[in-house]
Amino acid sequence: RGQPPPCTDKAELDKLLKFYHSKFNKDQKEAFRQAEAIMDEYIRCRLARIDFTGQNLFIHGPGGTGKSFVLEAIRLMVHQKTTQALHGELTNSTTLVVAPTGCAALNVGGATLHAAFPLSIQQGRAQSVNTGVSSRKLQQLRIQYADLHAICIDEISMVSVDIIVLLSSRLNSITGIRAGGPMFGGIPIFAFGDLHQLPPVFGRRLWLDPSRSAQTSVIAKHPWRDCFRMA
Image (tube, rainbow, N blue to C red; front, side, top):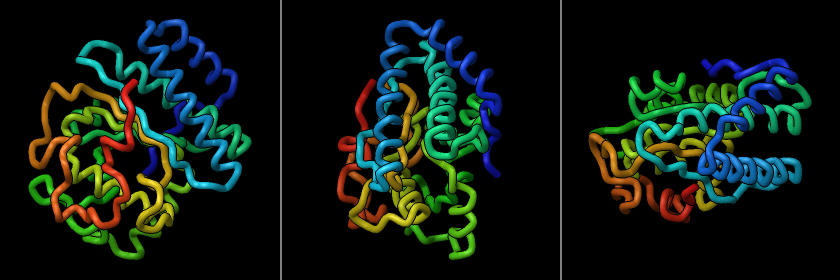
């Protein structure tokens, strides 16, 4: 089931975004500005009917620095920009918020990565992208995420590189992008966390090379080192 839209009233949405802007500190403003630039480029690509190939954004900071506040502001911003530019009205939520554990997902009102994109993982290692997903299930995911325009991942330090590889492959399957095409299905990713905090329970850190089981043959770039920049 999709997550509820953050707001269905344009005036209220504008008011909420102004509130977040008024509360941002300098670092939060810069992170939000970079997120806006990414979404503007994504929308330009969608309107031109070309794949988005820009870099994704990693918003880094220790606990208590307001990352969740920025996450919610970005969620609202994405909803505002994409519904108005691509759909013409405020309808379904266009941002999916996920986290590696149930507790982390609950804290940001999201879902776990494993539940949102049925991922087949054994001790932190990504299995075949087709494992556990029938053609019928894949079609259901395509319908479910037809209006998905951005993904926010919280507590990114707990996500292994193999899981990120599998997520990219799953999104490419959902959006119909073939091997060798843009990473993550051409959908912008906003990652939040502190890489000095908790590591993955199983698997390798994000910046390391993925294991052989992670379908590295379909990946044109390293899913973290080449695809994310730090805000």
